[in-house]
Every structure is written in C-alpha cells, then in structure tokens.
Image 1 (tube, rainbow, N blue to C red):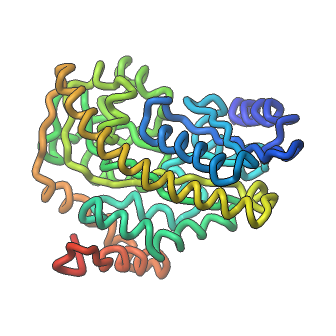
Image 2: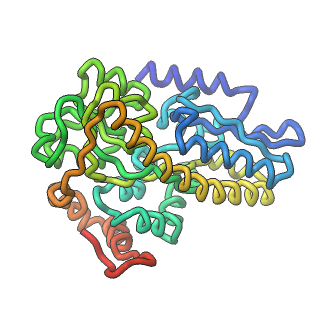
Image 3: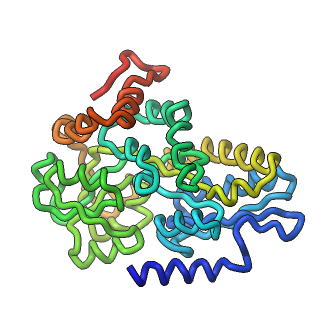
Amino acid sequence: MIKQYARLWFFCVLLCGCFACDQTSDTTTLKLAHGLSTDHPVHLGMVYMSAQLEELSGGEMTLEIYPSQQLGTERQCLELLQIGSLDLTKVSAAVMENFSPRMKVFSLPYIFRDREHAYTVFDGPIGREVLESSEKYRLRGLTYFDAGQRSFYTKEQPIRSPDDLTGLKIRVQESPTAMAMVAALGGAPTPISWGELYTALQQGVVDGAENNPPSFFLSRHYEVCKYYSINEHTAVPDILVMGTHSWDALSAQEKEWLTAAATAATTEQRRLWQAAEKEALAAVQAEGVMVNYPTKAAFMTATEQLLTAYADDQVLYPLIQRIQGTKTKNSTHETTN
C-alpha cells in the first residue's frame, strides 16, 4: 500500500508544472495516458482522435499521448484523473467497475449476442447512461472503443470445455466480475497487472489468461501460451475517460471539438480493430499456436448464474434485461441467453 501511494505521489510530482489541461498558451493541450503498445488498434484510434482534434480546432487543441504505462497502470491513471493531474485515459470497463458499479454489467459473460448487438448498446441510451454514471466519481466517460471478445489462452492444454479450467490459475483484470466468472468456470482467478503478465506466465505464477486476439498477439504472450481457445465469454469494451476537473475547465467550444473527435475516432478504431483481429489470429497460428473453437453452450450454462445473481438488484438487473432486450437491425428476437 505504501509503495502504491509513493508511486502515485511520484506521478503527481512528475506532472506538476505541466498541469493537465495546459492552457498556458493559445493552445489547449490535453494529456492522455494508457497502458497499451503503440501498435495496438486502440492506441491507433487515439492517434486518429488526436489528428481529428487538431483539425477540428484549427490547432487550438492538441492531445499528448503517453502509451505503455508510462504514467502508471489503468487504476493509477484513473486516480490521477480524479485529482486533476491527468486529463484522459483509456481503461477497460472491467477496471472502471471499481469506480462506477454500473460498469460491471459489461463484464458479464455472454451479455451480448454479437458485435452488432454490443455496438447498438454502446452507441444508444444504455451506453450513454452507463458512461454518465461515473461522473459522481469525478470521471466522465466519453466513448467506447471496441476491445473485441475475450477468450482463454493457456500454456499446457487447450480449453475445450469448462472442465478443462478446473484448478488452473487464470490471470484476470482487477475486476470482481471477471474473478467471479473464472471461478464459476472452475478456474482460480488471479488478478495481475497487464504489464506484469508476460513474466507471470513465463514463471508459472499463472497457467493462462484471457483476452482478445490483438492483445494476445501484440503482448507476445503467444511465445509462452501455445493454446488459444476462442470461446468469446465476454465483450468488455475499452472506455475513453476524462477527469471532471479537466472537462469542467474546457470552454463549450472545446468540449464540442473534443466530443466530435472522440466520435470520429470511435468509428475509425472499430474499423482498425476488426482488421487487427484477423491479422492477429493468422499471426499467432503462424507462430505455432493451436487455435480451437469450443462450443459456447457449456460456458454459457456454467456462467448463467452470474446474471441471475443480480435478480434482486434494482439497478443492475433492469439494466441486464434492457441490454438483452435491445434489438439490432438484424434481430429476429428480443432476448438472449
């Protein structure tokens, strides 16, 4: 705990003097930090956002991006946002649930029927409502980036059914919902930060992890884990978050520019994501990874209890029902699971 606060204090000192939302000149410079590599499609989406922001504002607003955990983990970046020492960050909705409980609905297994269903929820009134729910925690959600579907990858054996997870130590994000999901499937959930996971896999601290294809590939976890089982248990989005300190410091015009740039970046990021998924799967197979596609029914049955457990929750259960009842253009029914 002492080390955690010491590191947070170090980041605050580091950013002091280049205070978030720098308006010391005619240009407003926003600082955005995240934990992904520079070749990740989510990072590339944010680079596109930076270009859009500069173009829309005629150079009056710029974005400085600090990737690869330069300013800390996802949780630490959120804490920096809350105290006004950082403007923006990208975090998984799974991590956001520690700050805004409604976010946990997006970490529930098989809550979405497919990608189109997820996009419809994110871009509609439900998505906006969940984004706004974090404002009382001094965090303002701006948009959802596609982070694909998460599946299991392991070192010693493929996962063909929930029984294959029994006793395996599986890395999860710092998310109670993710931990409950792995436990329901018979595994031993082990929270480890993303930056420490490669070493943890290599040293046998965990037997596997779960993530989307681009992250599996770009992290080079395929060098350690040779089995990738595409069961697509969750579709947890990434969220672009701004501290309310920084948001409130912007003018109405600046808020408009920033919102428009984030919207444009969302469309571009989703295009980049879908291409990156295909490339990543081909690349890991070329590196000797065995990719298999287990039947999802057994995983859905084993985790169904996680959804019904909220039956008495007057906030989350109606939200679950609304998501399940959301129609898409190709819908032939209103409910799922």
